[in-house]
Image 1: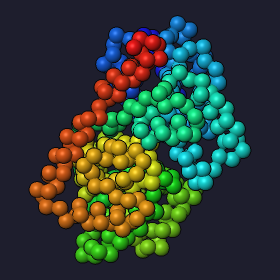
Image 2: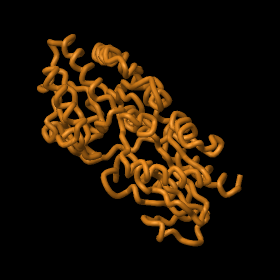
Image 3: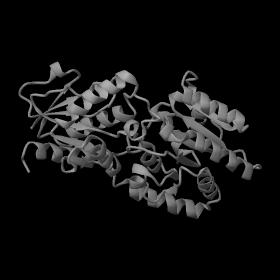
Image 4: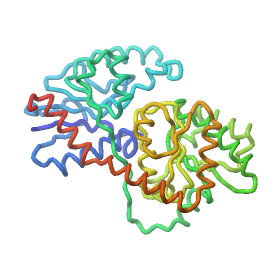
Length: 351
């Protein structure tokens, strides 16, 4: 097969993380594990070779024109999630967004097959767009972050981001669905119950340092209101090599989202032997495995899980990490590539 793959998501703010991380790892894995096929990369539609068998767009944004209205080739697109359309009151489209969504929806209905990250997203795509479920393939992702041997000392990383141990960790954005305010409420209660200990909460993500965002403004207000400002570390953007260290030394990752299309940090934390606390809703419930699952709508549930981790014996922690380590082995980029090729073959009638 000769496959043309869009690299549009490798530019801009998601080059290495999120959709950019998915695109990068997918391309590398296809070339590594499926050398029997040829791949042409393109940024704009004008770069699609006429002799290709199939075109794959690894990202879809409902409010941007990420997908052409018409295609001369068989087409596959990866739709990671439709969260803004599941919760429209929290993600207002505006006039331009509404128009672009109507255009994108029509274009999406014309593609031959859709890949998505979770059963949760598959159900959303079918319900919101009316796309046939039989033409939607669920291909769970794999950890986007890999162990990097840099020789950098942990003490240097701590100094760089002003991190102090012990700390709980959150990695991600500040969007409504991430439930950061709920995390802050839970951490405040946790601190009340553990006054003699100096736990911190490290927030990783560049949006935490962008005070122009209304979500960040709300987060800053809540920190002051709860009087936990001195316990919050806004690390901002953290490089991949440093993030590995930040994962490894955390008491636990806390991912209390109301809704996710997938949730890279959950698998990444497991990869780097960090206990995981995550939601029992949406796609997170699908990949949570042996992690501690909480109700994101009840911040006391989050607090209880944090308490449980902090009181773990060394033996109990080792047992949890061993189980997590076995679980995360189910998610590999080799499998993502293999399943993606299987989707291509279905589109081309080879199976």
